[in-house]
Length: 360
Ligand code: GN1
Ligand code: MG
Image 1 (tube, rainbow, N blue to C red):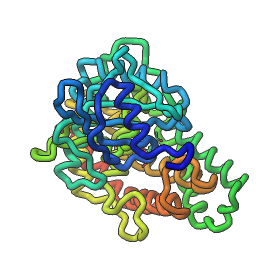
Image 2: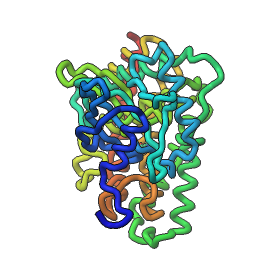
Image 3: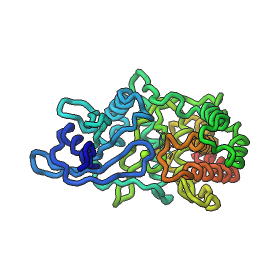
Image 4: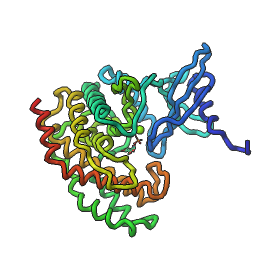
C-alpha cells in the first residue's frame, strides 16, 4: 500500500474495534443518502456468532454539532412513544454513542433490523405505510418530556431564509452558473409567495422528523409493513406540514428526484391518496383542523424549498448535496419545479381528499 493510503475497510475495522464489535467479516455501502456515508457490516464478536450492524460516518460539514445531534437521537430513541420506530444504537464498551477513526471521522453504529429494507421508489401500498410510519413516529413523540429538542440545523425548514440564500447565490454567482439558469430562476422567483405560505397559520409546533424522504423508512421485506424510521439527525420542533409535505414530494412523484427528463414528472393521484390515508391513520385523530388544512400547501412548500436548496447548491458549485456530475443538482431543480406545477394543477382534488379524510 502506498505511504499514508488507507484501504476502504481500514476505518470500518477501526469502528469495529472502537465499538467492541469484533472482527469485520463483510461490508457493503447501504442506502442512497446524500449526507452521511452508510455501510452494512457483518461482524463476528468474541462469542463467535456473526451479527449485522449499520455503521455511519457522519458528515460534520453539514452537522457541526454532533453532540447535539446525538443528544436528540438518544432522547428520541429512549422515548416509549417512538422507541418501536427507531433502530437501537450500539455503544462503545465505555458507553459512548460516537467514536472517531484514525483520520478523525466520527462514526456511529446501529443494530441492523433483520429483513428491513429501504426503497428509493415506492408503490401505493408502501407509500401508505410510509405515511402511517412518519405520522405515528411524530405523534408518538408528542409527550416527549421537556426541555424541547434543540434544532441541530437552525432554520432547516425556514423556506423564506432558503429563498433569500438562493437569491444571494444567484447574485454573487460564485462559479458563473447563473447565466445558463434563466428559465429556472424565473420559475423559482414566480413561486416566491410559497416561501411564506405556512406563516401565520396557527400551526402547533410538534416534534417532527424533518427529513421524511421516503427512503428514510425501512419496510419489512416480506410483509411490506413499515418497521423503522431512519435519518433522525434533523428531528426537532417543527410543523406536521413539513413532514407530510416532504413525504409527498419524495414518494408522490412518478419520476425520481433527479430524473433527466422532467416531462415524466408528475404527482401521482393514487399515490397521494395512499400517502394521505396512511398519514391520517398514523396521526389517529391527533391533528388540529388547521394542521389538516396545511397538508396540501405543505407539499407545495416543501417541493419549492427543495427546488431552492438544490438551486442554491448548484449555483454555489455543489458543496452540500452529493452529486454524480455537474448537472445533477440542476436536474433535481427541474424535477422539483415540474412536480410543483403538477401539484398546483391537482390542488383542488388534493384538498377535496383531505376534507373527506377529515370528515372521517
Ligand atoms: C438530504 O440525507 P438524505 O439524503 O436523507 C437532506 C434532506 C433533503 C434530501 C433531498 C440533512 O436527505 O433535507 O430533503 O437530501 N438532508 C439534510 O434528497 O440536508
Ligand atoms: Mg436518508
